[in-house]
Image (cartoon, one colour):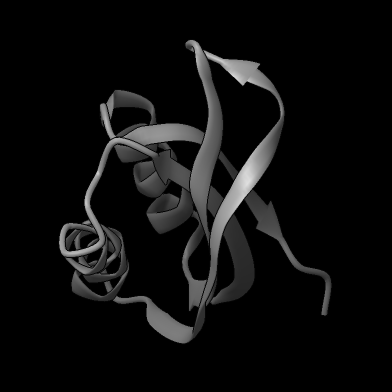
Length: 95
């Protein structure tokens, strides 16, 4: 199992009540495929470095997890097709 870190930005159009369920969707995907969540950090609403799809702000989240490589690929696939994600990145952390 490898250590990973993912940063994703959720759409600013979501309400504060919807955010936990959206984050739970991605963390559940990791744990249901045999991964382990190490830490979830909510960075809050921040301004984007540049405009993306006519949006200037988004809700930032950072998740550290341990999983097999196929879990990270599946997470990227789900990020790519999710309409609530503005931007995402998944990084493998060196030991």
